[in-house]
Length: 186
Image 1 (cartoon, rainbow, N blue to C red):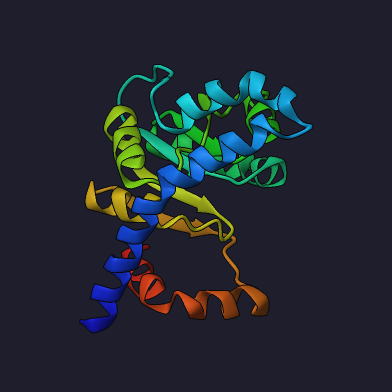
Image 2: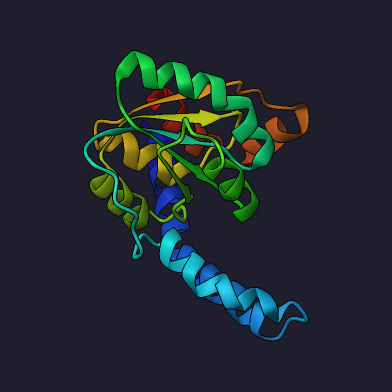
């Protein structure tokens, strides 16, 4: 029980810090030599905070793949899921290049940038897109994505999930949070 409470406290702290981190990132780009990125940054932030939405009728299967490699690796599985469940496939990625790669694959009905891992953003994403299940590719585990999904009744699964020794050491630091989330994954 104590571990579960600590996990919830860590999740709350992540949600308190998240908007400030987003603001710091924007400010860093303002003073960066890569200011050209700002041309699309505000559009990306609208998508990540689920202010800008793409229409997708009815419930779907949500696949979260970090980038291009994961998108390519999951395309055949997505096709099988689409056939088996007769639902559209919504895919999210962390990168614009991953999103562009997903948009070129016919199996994916909608390709978006992943919502920022802020509980209210993920909750809004789920409310709008109504996923029946969330499939996370590899070990791209975002606490609010998993927590908000399971709280909304969305089944969460992982494919090709493996954790390196290095990652396992980092996860030990957040052991209460991991203990809160892992049982939620079916």
